[in-house]
Length: 533
Image (cartoon, rainbow, N blue to C red; front, top):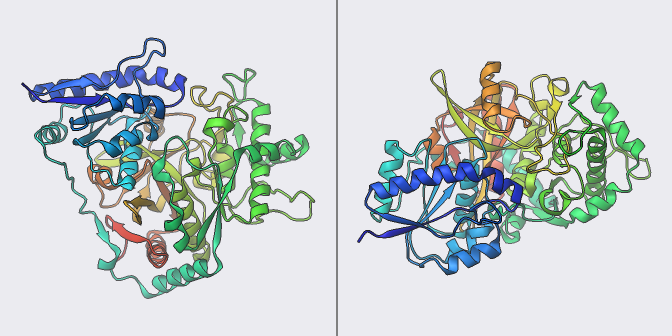
């Protein structure tokens, strides 16, 4: 009798998202089940479709624990993802599961499973859980079928990650190394505060840096509350908020508004976001924060419009001025206050380092994260779609503020609306990076890429296959293939920062790598065209 594999599907916490995304998940599961059975194996679902909820996802940690109590502890376990998922719903069961684990995602930007799986993989990496992983567009390609066959036969899958090499195997340019080392010493000596508005967002266990790993870098957490942020918003006057809105209007930023708050972006929603922007700066100033992260999502999402407009403005050097409560000072004048979306502390640490290196070099220091949404070939070149819910600094967009549009966040995720910072990222040279935790070690991958401008029809096609209200970046990674990136990258997020030229980007990469290294982080250089020998 063929051995039986157990299939589970982890989902969102939000009912509307699970219901909307179920059809795509069900279609992917059918293909995965058919592939497993084609190799003579049986497969059973570890939990049933819920008629009352109208979806078949694990939708809470509580339910996840119920599911895992009924899964044989040594059974082969397949986690199939076609959607964004909250990793903590299943991490407990994966942590104690004794059988082989395989994560599988569809190659689609729709909801997206690719992003969800990257987060789950990174969470398991942090937790020290062994696993295998596969991804596919149609689940009939040789890469997927061969990998599935080998995993079912008991093999743990190991993919090609030869593009990532230890920093120690390269010689850094002297000036860049000295700069990075000096800035690491300065950070450790003077220290820095990372402000966190409620730790842990949407199950992203991988996004939390344990204090004992963070402190040696010189960075310490100030654990703030979203309720305090909301309370501070209530003290901001309509007149102050309107000044922020007026500043944006004068810059040429466009807001696509309408009359129905349930489906349209309204002026009241925008004013609420302007109040949040002011409140975040004042609280950050109170606590001396050099970088801040707003969780939004659970709790705050039921009180206020989305935080994304706020986040993008904070990440921009040129932004609406905000005075202290007594009116005596302009807060963080002439500076970005790096914001890490979804309180991803790995991004926060990275953004802080990037801001300091880029500022010292005289480059525009705007930095942000994107979701690695998906990618596809365009005229012989593989072009990634990097997309995030709106926290991009306008400086990254073609045309700056004048090329930026704010649209209402999708009601499925954002009931109270709020505007995004939508635009197309300008062509140019970037440094990309990711800080992550690997079984008790703080690590960083860093590489180079170019941002390309695609024809409007191609950009619109990619937007329509993902989330058209969000800002988009068309990225070509140097010397890193699609599958190599998927095999190595330990997050749903990727940090990006522009440099004036390829030569400047290489200098920034080297200085940043040296600073990371001297902060005690294990650094790998990824791909090619980084200028290192």
